[in-house]
Image 1 (cartoon, one colour):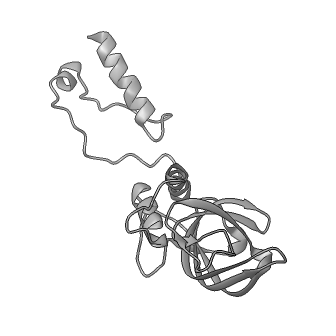
Image 2 (cartoon, rainbow, N blue to C red; image 1 turned 180 degrees about the vertical axis):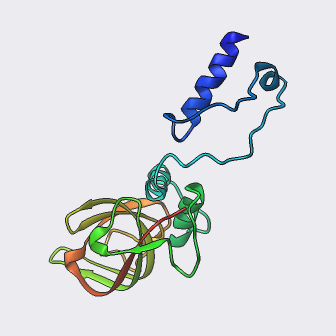
Length: 185
């Protein structure tokens, strides 16, 4: 019975969001656990990661799958926020607004009437939502779904509902607005 109690305490510490200060409840006894009578609902443990990183982890796991939900770009973001237990106030506000220059992995971008043009490519995001995977200067790697095919010669352009990565270069934006949001709990 001592080994069982020790194992339960170890599991409790591992599962805790803050292992340095985690303490098992004072009335924790092996017989209560063994009988399935002890359930602590008095507090909810703090989440182990900031919300934006939890959103990113969900999106990374979903890459190559899809479609998520109804296949719309927002369905992936809504599912990621739900998995991260983050707030979604609605109306395409995905958290706390942040400056585009301060964007971090796991932040969410809302595109409105955006066009990118470079010598090698063109892309349009008339109304789109995506999760930032990586930031490398002005180049952002996105995780998103319901975007056009990568082949610019394919006519008509077909929407791809799979969750995938694409890069955008903010220096190549020629029109429209991009609002960045940091998910919060």
